[in-house]
Image 1: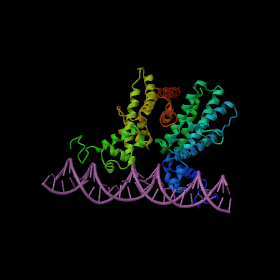
Image 2 (image 1 turned 90 degrees about the vertical axis):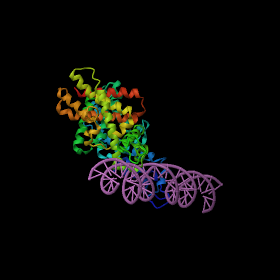
Image 3 (image 1 turned 45 degrees about the vertical axis):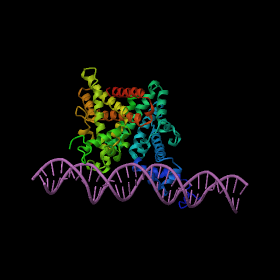
Length: 210
Length: 210
DNA sequence: GTCGGATGTGAACAACGTAAACATTAGGAG
DNA sequence: CTCCTAATGTTTACGTTGTTCACATCCGAC
C-alpha cells in the first residue's frame, strides 16, 4: 500500500496516526479530550480499530502522554542550552535552572500537552522509557538527576542531600506548573507567571546550593 | 416528614445526602469515582434527582471537593496546634510548617479526598469560600497567607518577598503531595514519604527565613 | 381544604469504552 | 503466480455515563 493513500482498507501506520491525532486533541482540550472515539474519528477510522494497537483507552492516553513527555524533555534541553557562562560551576547550575525553566515554560506554553503528560498514572518505570526521551537521549527525570549529579560531582552539593534536592526541585516546579495551568493561578497574565516561575526556580536553586 | 424516613417520596435533605455519598465515593476512588449516577444510587435516589440541587455533574464534584477542602483545613489546623515552643517567633514558624505538614499528611492519609479537593477547577474565589473553612473559620489558602503575614509582622520575612514565599510554599507542598499520591513516588512506603515530606517542609521554611 | 412551587421519578437520547463476529488485505510458502 | 494465514479494519451490539423532559408526589401557605 502506498503511504498517504487513506482510502485503502488498511491504513499503513495507524498506530502513529492515532498517536498524532490524540496529541492534537490533547493540545487543545487536555487529557480529557483524548477520547478513544474522537481520536479514531480524527484518524478516519472506526473506534474498534484502536484496539489493534492499544489494549485500552488508558494505554492510548499513556502513549500520547509519552509524546508530550518527549516534548517536555526537549523544552528542558532548550533552556539548558542557554549557558552563557562557560565556567563549569555556572554551567552545572544553569543545567539545573534549565530543568525548572523548561518544565514551567512547557506547562505554560502548551497546558494541554503538559496535562496529558503528567495527569496519567506514570510510574517510576515510565521515568526512563525511551519514547519519552528528548534530543539528547535523556528523559525529563534523567535530565533532572543528571543536573543534580553534576552539582554533586563539582562539590557544590553534598552527596547525601542529592536525592532530597531532586525531589524538592521536582515538587516545587511541578506544583507551580500545576497551580499555574489547572489551579488558582491560571487566570493570571502570562508575563507575570513567567516572572514568578523564574524567581521561584532561581530562588530555589540558590537556596539549595548553599 | 420525619428525618431518617427514607421511604417517603421526598428525601428531606437530599443535597446533604448527595454530598455525603459523594464524599464516601471520593475517599476510595478519588474524583473519578464520584459519578453522578453512582452518587445518586448510593443516596437511594434516581439520577435526575441530583439536578434539583446541582446544575451539573461538575458542580456536584466541586461541592464534594469543598467538603474535602474543609477537611484539609482541619488537618492543617491540627498540625499548626503542635507549637511546643511558646515563643512568638518559633510559634509563627510552626504555623507555616504546620501548613505544609498538614497539607502533606492529609494527602497521604486520604489521597482520594485530596484528589477531589484539588483536581477540580478551583479558582481564586474558591480559595475563600466559607464551605472550605476549618474550625478556625479560615480556608487552607488563608491559613497559608496568615502564617506568612505573621512572619512578616515579626520581621522574620521581608514584606516584598511575602507573596513569592507563599506561592513557593504552596507549589512545593502541592507538588510533593501530587508526586506522592498520583505520581511516581506513590509506590514508596508511607514512613519514608512522611520523613521526606517533613524534611522538605523544614528545609524550605529554613531557606525562606534567612 | 386547596392549590402552587418544590422535589423526586421514568423514559429517552447521545456519547463513551469495549467486545465479538465478520471483512479485507498484506505478505510469505509452495 | 497462487493460496493461505495472520494482521488489520468494520459492523454491530451492550452496558454505563451525563443530561433533558414530561410526569408524579408532597410540603406549606393561603
